[in-house]
Image (cartoon, rainbow, N blue to C red; front, side):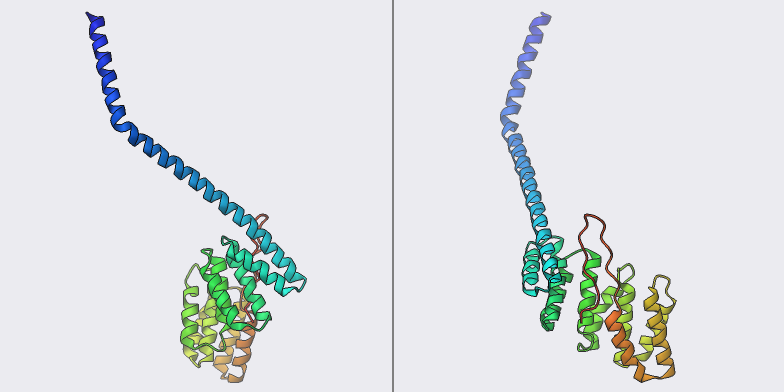
Length: 250
């Protein structure tokens, strides 16, 4: 009798599994198919992105070599191709194109390229470097409101070029005769712990000029800062993307 009961139970289990398989089999198969398609899609996208990055690296290097040889047309063409490929080299290539535009006296094009470079990357160093360059490019022509809009976001704590942006904002206020506000920022820069020595020294010189009332020295301070008030680019480690010199445009 025990064997009979076991056979009946086995048949019942078999029928139950068959019903479950008929009911849920297509669903499980569809889920597995979707997962397979998603995995293959991600693999294809990742492979395409890797190839694009490698091609952009080659184009960027070709542009640098052409730039070193003085062939601006070939350099701009190579950098344009690298930028169109997107990825990490887009912001770098746009920065280089902005430099070429400045050498060709196309200031408006350079400004547009720097603004585009700042929007093209989430890397804070590349982003803020391009934004700071753009601010210096219009330093002598833009209204104070426009300069403030460009520079204030860069002055926040933790931003990579915060000290340079604060100095630029103080210089802009200085140029527009807002001496108390400019002096206050220069004092903070002269006392800051994480302020580069070059910025601290220029801040101290600006404070002395304001306190002594030597207005004739102020344009020279502004011009000197516009020509040198940005940090040197970090040297990339082996295998990292090169970072262009962030010296102020113009």
